Image (cartoon, rainbow, N blue to C red):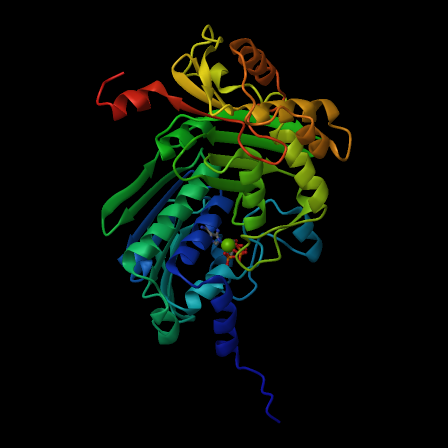
Length: 429
Ligand SMILES: Nc1ncnc2c1ncn2[C@@H]1O[C@H](COP(=O)(O)OP(=O)(O)OP(=O)(O)O)[C@@H](O)[C@H]1O
Ligand SMILES: [Mg+2]
């Protein structure tokens, strides 16, 4: 007798709570909808970190007039039809939940013009209740305005963070979607101030313009897994952006794994592609976590791909150092442990033990205990080396399949650009 069936208006709010907890969640859902509608231009405006106002405008296909009033209903989606479609997702959306959730916790204005129509439709919704639908003149595409998020749920509103925190979340989120959709132009304005302005471009240009840095690029395929990697090494604070089949992924597991394989002080942008039936995005309401159907197999293929021959193309073949400077000048040994050498514009610090360990490991690869034997039989730290020994060891390093990390994931070397040293000394390079 204590059990009651919740009335629909309460139920809708509970469901909303799962997907929409912050302004960034609103932006995420709206931007995903725009991308699913094949937009090539997405404009976002916010005020008060999105707490007061969010607008997302796109030039996608628009919503068909017959669907227009349905899209805010619970479970209304055009993207899947049956459960089995979940195994073959090619769109961001599939729950038919987002617009419904957003509409029920805000004052929303939805405007859309379908690409085969010469007018648009506009709908006003307040706390889930439709206040009216009318025709409007507008360009093809969709525009959603979300005002006063959680105005009808004061307890939730209280949990929103400070304006700048919410704004940063939105900025980060848009960067992620911009990284994985380089052909789409993005803009973000906060309180009428420009925060992001990205023209459609190719992937490399998008990555480099977002971080204002040059990156090493590497692509590899292993069985059913494809990976494209952008790396910037030796940054102060490492960070990985991970995408699986075009979705930004927050998974700690994968990020820890990448840090171990590619280094902790690396800025990495990693695009992984897998056949859709091997991934389940339907485990998390916000689709930020994934489950691999064959997790161990996927991770081992990923590891193989990331430590393969092509990836091992050392940095000196990348743009900033000319090829002819392929030779090292050995400067000396530090604490009988670290070899110091110069090549081109870089000073290298090699861990002598790790070069030797990696070398052994690569020869023993097929044995299950390879890493243990490799370590035991390797040259130790604390061993004095002649200049000839050091030169030989660097030659060994150059021929490694993966010259970057030891079998346990520690970096084999660290290098610094002479420019950085000159800078510290107040000299220009
Ligand atoms: N910007 C848009 N352009 C064109 N159609 C849109 C747009 N936004 C929403 N729609 C239509 O409205 C439907 C409902 O959107 P909603 O985001 O609620 O659900 P979904 O995207 O299908 O699934 P999910 O809840 O997982 O996001 C979509 O399936 C789509 O048909
Ligand atoms: Mg959606």
